[in-house]
Length: 188
Image 1: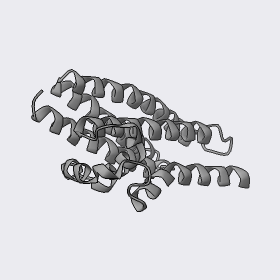
Image 2: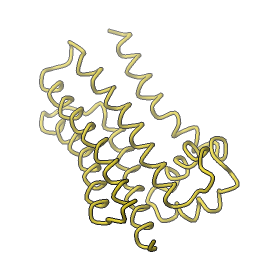
Image 3: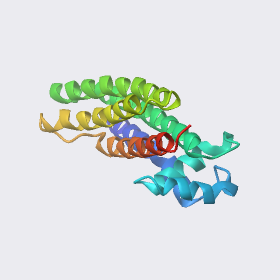
Image 4: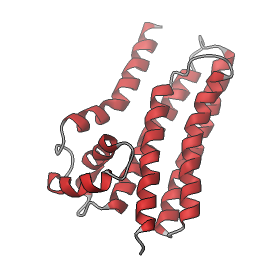
């Protein structure tokens, strides 16, 4: 039982380590020569430090850092974190000591995380196709999936062990929405 709790604690904290490390050490993971451009673009998002984190964690492979590449980085970050949280939810749901209602709520979250992964791709594809309505709909839907996961626990009532991760995921996708709007508002 203690090993399970330690695994969960490690999983929760390690999934957030890239966020903390990149935020506290700008330029370590990404191309620091682009920091001025990144700051200018990230200023259009609600979570500027998270935007910098995406650039510094995922930007190492980009020759050019622009709004489109930052959007791709946010989508990549959201997919990575969603897959991690989905795995954690599956692990928690397999624990025999968890109540039936919590297992059901976790099952809802697992399905919603799968839907989020699909719609992140659809939203990114819509931006590339310059379809602002679909991009907005898909990315807004992804945010609602994370929120609905939280709601599944509110209805029980029980605390959501994934609440912090859901909040971070909502912030990442909120930034992606802002970047998609920026890209689509400046024209081809």
